[in-house]
Image 1: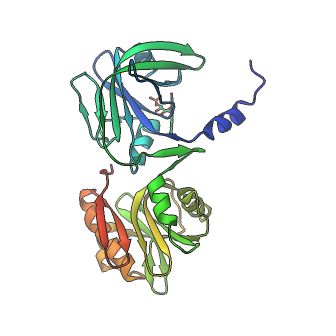
Image 2: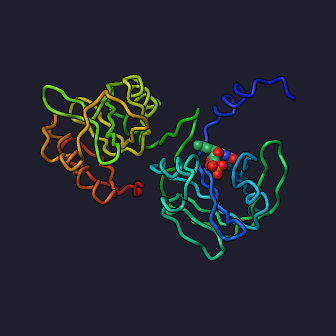
Amino acid sequence: MSALDPRALRRAFGSFMTGVTVVTCKAADGTPLGFTANSFSSVSLDPPLLLVCPGRFLSSYDSFASCSHFAVNVLAEGQEDVANTFATFKGDRFARTPHRADPHGNVLIDGALAQFSCTTHQVVDAGDHAILLGEVRAFHHDAGRGLGYAGGQFFSLGLERAALDPAGNTALLGAIITEGDEVLLEKTDAGYRPPQVISTERQHVRRTLAGNLGSRGQPVRLGPAYAVFDDGNVQCSYFLANASAAGSAFTRHPIRDIPGLTFATAAITQMMHRFAEEAETRSFGLYVGDARRGDVHHLPERT
Ligand SMILES: Cc1cc2nc3c(=O)[nH]c(=O)nc-3n(C[C@H](O)[C@H](O)[C@H](O)COP(=O)(O)O)c2cc1C
């Protein structure tokens, strides 16, 4: 037994900023298996080797520790939902995640920034984890930014920068929080708006917003950014979010009623109308621009 405090050690390990991957393999009967991992590392170019560390606590540990091939999918900015699914969801993780089979018998996650299809090179016993070394047989890499992870939180470099780039010192952070078919809003004299906070915190945008909502009695699971714009006074960043527990801080409205509501500003009205439309197909875009003009970028589909 070590004398080190395991929780303090876990926190210290967690201070190392990483990307986020989903590692997949198949069970003996062909069922796809996968888990979220940040223990990924590139190892060697010649031969092309990488590693990832499956923990013994995984329900799929035996399959990963004995697999002949596996894949590592580097998640892109906006794929927090995929990371959460493959970290915590206990049902069929693949049923809620677009994916495909590759010619090497591996399962690849759609929308991942990079996908490495490997054969198992070596499995090394390593305490409560194993080190799974893979030889890369094929890979695919898209331009874009990866999803980040530090101190137990996901972060998106590009979006955090975009939210905090402007000349002003403050940023408005808001969340379009849904629970089932309802959206949570706060009422002001000018009309409804998504719950928001004005922040001078120039880092940890997501943590600031989630912490603020939690302290107001509404814990949330934040998803990708939905709109980033300058409304003339302040840089506004709105994120999609799911209520992670019931709260009573905000009023609930069926999403289909959004077109009939009065919102606090024109920019919020426009954003919420787009949200109501996109919620029908669950195909959301990221708006980047100013309060009047900008572009909508397609985001990975949310389950
Ligand atoms: C950001 C992040 C990184 C993780 N990294 C690892 C890892 O490197 N190795 C591991 O075994 N589990 C890791 N986990 C935990 C597993 O994803 C989680 O325990 C697993 O999906 C549980 O699967 P199971 O329900 O099939 O046991 C990580 C979780 C998160 C959120």
